[in-house]
Image (cartoon, rainbow, N blue to C red):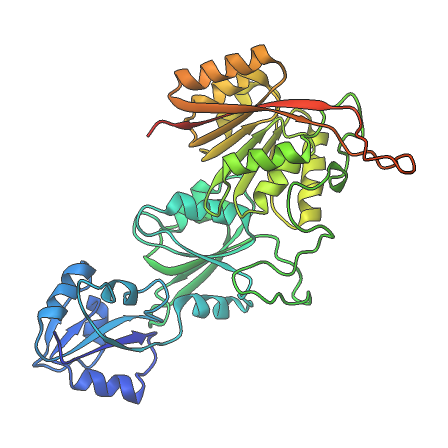
Length: 412
């Protein structure tokens, strides 16, 4: 193993004394081509690239001498340190970081970023990165070739966002461009360090949060999930409209849907959006489908009240699903077997459906079975505790109710 291994984060500014000293004494220097050309690498030092980081780590482990690895910004933040510290290489590192590209990008934009999400599109994760951008109003995306600003903007079609595209940060060719998302694909971009995707961010004078990576302190009065229906404006207000799912049913549906950051979830026949809002509070991107624009507006109002983003789509038949982005999970709250069949054709990883009758539950299960899902379900019976009771009497319950819930996941 090398006698000493120093990882230098470089942001284009002059090296610190410690970094310059480590580089001057190196017998092996690893880095990107432009870094090796720009920095004073000793003539006697072996030079290796980082295109294959694991191959570079193996070469460093075999080297006898003093090794330096040059990386962008902070190499411990979505950088080379994680790979170099893998136990199979046995490397002990000294890390000398510079300002991370994410911090630099937000500085160029003049924005605070403790409330931002930071995601990487490397390794085929562009779709998941785009879903985080759908769900959150302030996201930094570390991009790469084939997963850059244009590809990201195309995945966010119809979602109003501003892009701050930072190319070649920290170099003499640095360029920072601010565009609305629909204009981003019209440009040819160099491989940028980071792209900021900005939505409707609260005003700068709003009180700061206290936990990095989370939005500002929750604006709504309610905490938790599976909240009572009265927490959602309009729930059960009109007997002619579909009734909202009871809280205990929502709790089970959420457990089976398992929404998480990077996921995209549909709620079809979303009612007043209670399930959609609660899925969004778990960090997932959510599209809520309802028949009427007025219902969609009501869902949006409930999402704003809860401090989350929920997209809406107006439409009643299965054809409305055709324009929606690919889902990871779907809840069919209204629409019956026909809607379940249309959903199953899109092959989401998890499906939950509400059935109104035993016959409908059986048909729903058959559809999911035929589509290659492993299915299960429950009949949930409940009766509310009465608010008042006779003196000295035990608790009494109101009129009972039941809900049929069917769910499926693809066979392993």
